[in-house]
Image 1: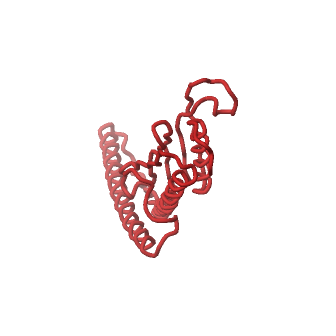
Image 2: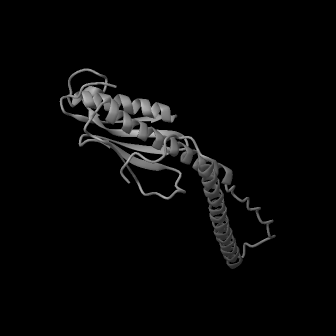
Image 3: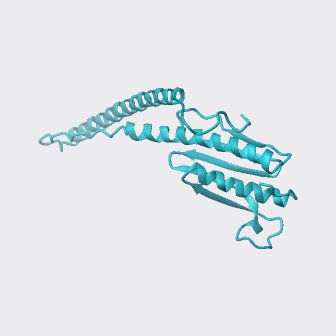
Length: 207
């Protein structure tokens, strides 16, 4: 929903760590189940194809000495990689929510803006390896943010004069995107972008 999140920081409490471990254990079970189901379907398909080829050779009279069947190498389930990726995303998302709360307090108490920061999260499953939310301040500032194990991506439309820093461009809007490896980089970037937007709106820069 709309709001900057819950809790005071990105630090994981014992209760949150326990919940995280339970989620990852359940995720591992899901990944293994899906992997086994896919492997069974793949094996059935390969056997059916081999039987069909054998029948075609028999009909054509070309069936000679039976060949040793090829060993079917199973594909790895990558359970550890899947769980590490999901866990990293969940921990980073917790830190992002902490950053949003700090940004909200900074906007209200330091910049003293009448506008409030809002973060609308997409209602995705906890098992999704990527989270998305739209961050907005007032009617004219809005960016899309994606969170995954590799970091954060921010994208949105900005006045062309903000690109390359100089005049010109008028009211033309151009699409910009950036990636950040840490939550601290993301928070610094958002402070800079919001402060610049606030100055453009005629607000005084207090913080």
